[in-house]
Image (cartoon, rainbow, N blue to C red):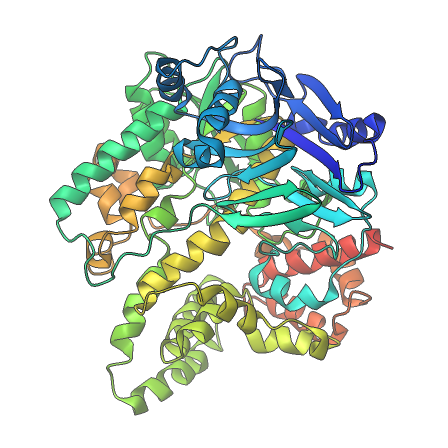
Length: 620
């Protein structure tokens, strides 16, 4: 796990070594253990290393034995031992024990097809001196980031945007993306909030050669016939359990102390239970909590820790740390990133980094298992549309009318029920937009001072879904999660926050074998009736404490809605209401007031607005 950077001048100008070093050093947090720079005329590769495997001989950039290949690599190849044995049988000779050298030898043997052989997470660049070609690759689902720009006759790339800004890429915001940000809470690949900077999409690679840069796809989510999905529950249970167990086993390969994030959910607890089967030592586990019991899952995490005899660590986040969290989020992401679960993620990463250098996480479980409540909503929407149209039209209004006298948690619950009913009769794209947005799409439309300049969120969603072959909304939602929200929200969140503390995170649920298998499982096996995470419950989770398996899902989020009701936030919110960020102040004021009075949970959306405003201020 590391930070990479690189420069290729199309006009054959020599690369400035000092500029390349500066690009690498601004991401020192990603790799505090070592620094390396390689320059070959108009090409340069930079590297910051976080040593996890082969601590003594895995320095980078690494050259092949004959000096014709050079690599700068961020990530881990979990099946590197198996690939090494295969390559050695074919005559390859190794001088290190690193997975980095395995990538080099695999490229020498199989060319760009080597990507298909890797089980892991990565962003790497290989300079092929013989072919005068630069090959840049990103892993299948986007666990590791790669940003780039073509500017002033140069192709410049790096793990994080700050390296590109250090090179001199202009920091010009894309105001036309405001609506997409306010709907999703993040900017999806290949876009960024900067006019001149692009994000390489997962499962894609770049080739720079003969003055040209081309992008190619080598993997995408399988889309089998939705009427021919796997329907044998017994076979699915067996295969799923075996794949997840093997994925955990592979991801425990390392030469440093490691542990696991542990929330009160089934996914992380299942990973911890499997880890305990593969080690004779207590697993180090790390949990974040809040004083508000509606958001606190420490008791459930303790039950899991006790059941599997882990060495357990906890930290409680409080609102006094808000300013630090806001500034830390902007510093880590280089652009507004509105998922408020970045806050607790930051603190659990900081806690874990005090004890270990690598952790396994439960991320990706909701995507692989189709386990989000939104999948229940899709099933419910299909049934809802069968009731008489008159009743469909009346129910949302009746629920909203009934909710008016209430505030707080009951009001929030009624709002959610009303939302499900009101969107059930919509088309898929309209319903998806309503699910994704933290406030009503109509409110976002009113919020923009210049809505005519915005790229509409609905148009973006339509563009994404053109690649989806499914008709069933359940599978269409699965496609969206894998193609957009998983890489650009979930994995981006964890990568930036973990690497800010020089901590490697590994995600067993995102083994590509498991993803490809579960993508072909029928929705009624994944979710018979409305039972979320059914496959996990029938397999690995059977060994978890009852308190966990029966607990409702809370989500790994901060209690922002309650924090923003407190008096100490009045000055911050008043500054937000003063405007200056391209948003209408009267609509901002209404959003803040609704949250303060407990009529709507607008906490995460207010967080998004604060981030946007402060980022724009910093841009000048």
